[in-house]
Length: 436
Image (cartoon, rainbow, N blue to C red; front, side):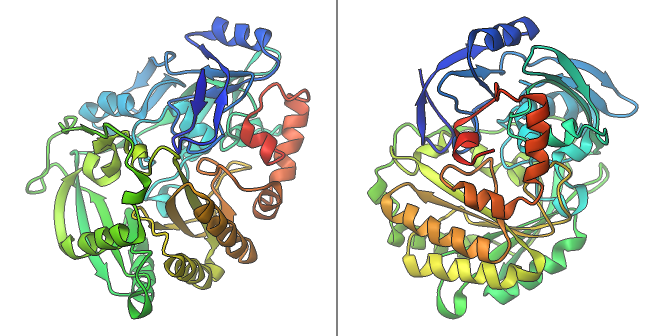
């Protein structure tokens, strides 16, 4: 069958195999020259694509053990974050790191070493993984723990499935008293004010900024900053420990690409910026963490050709200059993204290929066409010149040189792969493109 990532390009014709248990995984290893494990298909590009075999883990989705005293839970890798939330929230527990969608698997979260709006406090997801079971290229199974000399755990967290098949993981959850978050909304009139408010938000548990990337002149970089804290059970208006009900909508067709043009995106950004109400309100965790999940199939908004996301992180010392340059280039080109997000990161991620580092990350979505792909190459150059790197879970078109410049621990990662999988049984279209 033909398979793609969430961005809908590239597409690969491949054999898709469902994995329910260890025997299925071993059979796939025996039957195919190479393969890559795939969760719910939410990596944007080609990280979970392999022309020989894609091993789907979504049917391996059980909760295996839970300690209500410590909050440690052991799950199979194909379990969706949505299902973990359904289990944990009524019991007063919550995942300590939340990506922008709950429709991802736990194995995928580890493979991408995902981050959330609280990276400056909580780090990446791997920091909260106690252990994991990994099937190696020869079919053997190893329990991986952080801090071991062979670095297999650190290579697997953020390693995009290239060290083996994640079978299960034990994760430390955090306590919560309600499903509500105290959200504060702030409006920034320009880039300097947006950066100042992001810095001022470093003391809050969660913070994120939406950027109007088509604003120009004195309004360049105007933004809405959202800060959040978990609400206590006795806080007025806080919702009890129950999974919030949410009305979901579908995108029933591919939006014609002409609909998303500079004028329509500029109009949307103006409406969104003006509509926001500065102040404090209680919202449920679905609204705060997963706004896009309310529209299923939102990846059809950019049309049949798909879209690509450019997510970079810039070292803090160079962040102001680099992000201003990126916004100026995007604004001048007019290929605006209505999903432009700015976040503050804490320190370096624990995985050898973890994306975060101390600094700022900027996320931009673009419909895929020759003009936007040319623009993205210009943005790559700005990122590289300022010592930044791109997020592997979002990338679909960067080159190996960009990878080498951005990831200082790449050689250590390759040494682990050479030791554990010298024949490159685990491979993806992305790993081949980036020479991983």
